[in-house]
Image 1 (cartoon, each protein chain N blue to C red):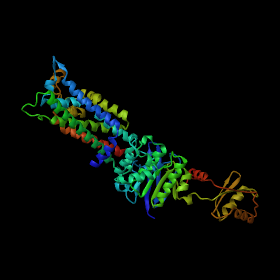
Image 2: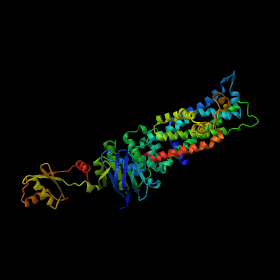
Image 3: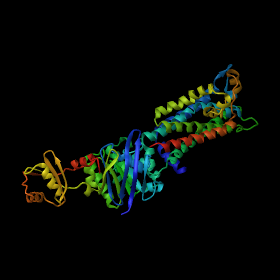
Image 4: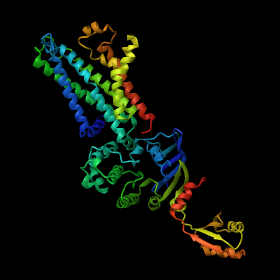
Length: 300
Length: 257
C-alpha cells in the first residue's frame, strides 16, 4: 500500500516548550489514521506543520512522495482547530471564497451544503451559526474539491451526540469511497470507533503507532496470588510460553496472556508446576486504562 | 491578479466596515476641498484662486493628502481581520502561498488608490468647472499629473499600513502605531536629522509627492528646508512601496500562521 503522508523526525519548539519531538509516522493510502493524545500533546502542531501553516524546527514530510506545494494542497481537504470563516458572510458566500481559493467550480457548493446539513441555513450569516453548524460548514469546505485526503482536527468538538454520530458516519462514508483520512482526537473512543490506524502522542513524543487492532489489544489482565510466595509465582509465570507479560503489582502478579488463551490454561499450568493458586481474578481491560497505560509508558 | 481581486471583492463588498470608511473618506474629501475654498481671506473667498485650472490640481492633491490615514486604517482592518478570523491560515491550507496573500491585499490597495484618485480627479473637474473661471488657454488637464502623484502617495500610505498590520496582527495596536509613526515619530526623528538625509525618510518622501502650493509662504514662516520635488520623490516612493510589500511577505514567511 502506498504512503499518502510520510513524516520524518518532525520537531517543533516554541521557546522553552518542545511541542513536538522527533515524530516519524507513515499514513498508508486508504486508511483512517487517528492521531490520539491528550490536549497539548502535539496533535495540532503536527497537522499545522504538514498543512504548511506552522514552520517546523526540524524534520521533513512528504505528501504523495512530494514536498508540500499548491498541487499537493489541491488533493487535500483540511480543517485545523477551529472553523475559519468570515463572520459577516453567509455560509454560501464563505464557501464561494473557499472554492475560489481552491480553484473549484461553484456548482458543487449547493450539494456540499446539503451533505453537511446546512442547505436550509445557507443564506444565514456565519456568525449566527451554532458551534456544530460552524464545524459542519468547515467539514463542507474541506470536502469541496473532492480531495483524496481529508485532514480533520477534532472534528466532533462541540457537537451534540447526534451531531457526533452524524460526523462519524460522514467520515466512514467518505472513507468507504477509498479516501484517506487523517484525524486528530483526544477521544480514545472516537479513534477506536472510526480509525483503522493510530499513533499515540504524549508531550510531543510518539508513544505507539500501528493498526488500531494491534495497539488496542483486547487481552484481559489476570491477577493471581496464594499457594506460593509472590516471587515464585512471578518466576513461574515468566517461564510459561503463552504469557506475554507478568509483573508484580502489590501482593499479586499481573499477567497478560496471548490472544486466544483462556485463564483456565494458566491455572492448569501452575497446577502442573505443583502450585495450587489461592486466587485468580480476570479483569477486563477498559479502553481508557489501555490508553492511560500507553501514554504513561516512558518507553514505546 | 484579477482572480485574486475577485476573491478580495467577495470579502469586501458585503463588509459594512468597508463601506462606512469609504463613504467617510469620500465625504471628507469633498468637505475638505469645499471648505478650503470657502475660507474668507481678507474678506474674499480663497476659492477663486484655489478652484482655478491649472493651479487646482496641485491644491486638490495637497488637500486630499491630509486624509490618507483613513484608507491606511481600512487596510489595517482588512489585514488584521484575516488574522482574527484565521482566514489567512485557512487560505494557506487550501492552496495559497504566503506571497499570494500579500498580492491579494496589494490588489485591494491598488484598487482603492485608483478609485480614490479617480474620485479626486472628478472632484477637481467638478469644482473647477463650477467655481473656477473656466480653463485658461493652457487647458484643463495641465498639471493634472498631481493626481498621479496623489495615487502613488495613497499606495505608499496603504503599503505602510499593510506592513504594520502584518507585523502587529492586532487591529487597535496596528492603528495606533500607524498613526503614531505617520503623525509623530518620524517628525521627531527628522528634527534631529540633517535635511540631506531626512528628505529620504518615508513620510517625507510620500508627503513631497503632493507639496503645499504655498510652499514659499510656509518656508518664510518655518525656515527653508531641503526637500525633494514630486518628480524626484517618485523613485524613492516606489522603492519604499516595494520594500513594504517585501517585508510584509518576509514576516508572513518567517512566522507561523
